[in-house]
Each structure stands twice: as C-alpha cells, then as structure tokens.
Length: 141
Image 1: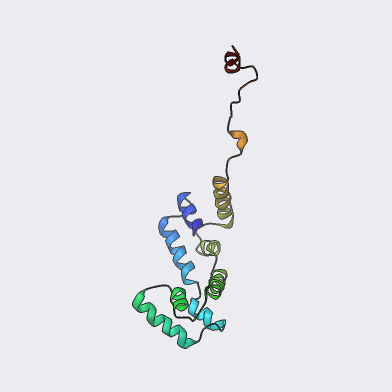
Image 2 (image 1 turned 90 degrees about the horizontal axis):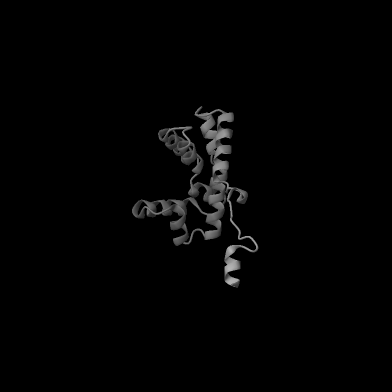
C-alpha cells in the first residue's frame, strides 16, 4: 500500500489510479472464512455464523471468529499470512494496468529507497575543540 502512496507523491501515478490499484489488490484477496474452510480450521456453518454476527456488529471476521471460539489468534495469523501471500502484488497490478513500464516502476522503487535511507554521517559536519584552544587556556589562568 505504501508503494501506491509513494508513486502518487513522486508524481508517477494519480491518486485515482492508486485507489483503483488498491481496490483491485483488496478484491484479489481470498476471504478469511473461505481460507478457514479450505484449511479445515472452520466449518461452513461456523463461517455463516460469523458472517451473520458480522452483519450486526460490522467487526472484522477474524475478531468475531476468535470471540466465538472458532479460531485462535495463532490460526488467524496463519490465515492472514496465507491471504496476503495469495493476493496479487501491487507491482503486478500496476504493470497489468499499464500505469508504468517495468523500468519506470523499478526506477520509482529505487528512488523511494534512496529517499528513505538515512544520510551518511560524513555529510554532517561536526566541530570538535582543538587541543590548547582558548577555552582551555583561559580556564588555566
């Protein structure tokens, strides 16, 4: 997600293009309930129970599944990792949409890394007192 913000900030894509890419990215994610059933961590009946609760409370699926005792935090974490790993990467979506070429995107990512990296210490000038400076000489007299 940060990539899209950086590309907008750098003038590579518009805010509207970034939002469209992010929408496609979120849409490519497999729902947690589906992943829970596929990984035999929940039954379909339990998923429907959580979905029914979700329509009332508008709380995240995983939070409700834990509260109802269908999932524990460890298994929810595993499902979230599977969800993230199986979704289409932002880079792929940007290239597929024709917003940037591979080279343009690589240059933008490189530029982003350069801007984020801390400046080397040698670029900061530091003044050190010299041996025998006036402050030492006046302190001794």
